[in-house]
Image 1: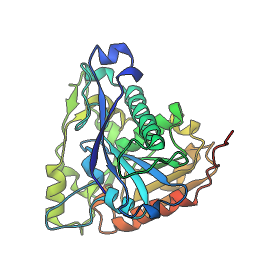
Image 2 (image 1 turned 90 degrees about the vertical axis):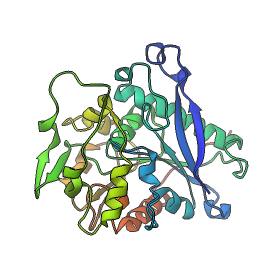
Image 3 (image 1 turned 180 degrees about the horizontal axis):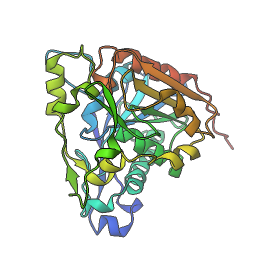
Length: 320
């Protein structure tokens, strides 16, 4: 079932200099299985964030004439409760009065506040009339590209989740593939002051974003979904070593998912940046570039995420 629109008021969680007297909300879509028995005794919740130039439609892409591009529907159908959240300042979520004050730490704080409310409402049975209360759940957070950066930062600062999925990202510094060569994205950061929002021309990025077998109609639909990205977090996401300290603080299981052609300069070195993580899984999706959601092999990726979430050890809460 879904998408069901849910807004989370995060005003009170943010510093006054960020909200400046305005109400700020994180907007999200909720998905859950039609057959609630597939949730099991201890359901898995998955909160998913999108990358730069995307909103929550990245994980729920509806493309005329082409079915099966919604990760959220697929994962819900397998028995997960899925929440797709827009970053503060992106999509249907509120824009801060001064978006440059919405740093990566503030954006992570806003999403943590939303995720906390999500689980509180799920436990109380007030999330949706068709969804009964669930207080004992396995909380998974995940994000693609810039959304992966924000997931790592959020987990390091707030410990929102029992496990995280880092998709299409790298701790070593983003490297794009252009004309068959990997190029360090940080070498192409714009100089000087930047506007609150930036837009990207996706045409030169096709090789980086999509494998050659992705239909032209799908690429065109992907391009049509492009949204402006807050420069503050968008540019941060391609700075070299930007999440090294955050990754070093993550002490929960990590699923590190990449395409065969993706942004990591050395996929097998990624685990070394998570020294406190004792359960690290690297999955490289064949015949996929950076945007795994549009790959012909995408269902392999989503199935792997589903089974990984059920394979990790998460101690049950102590009941008193």
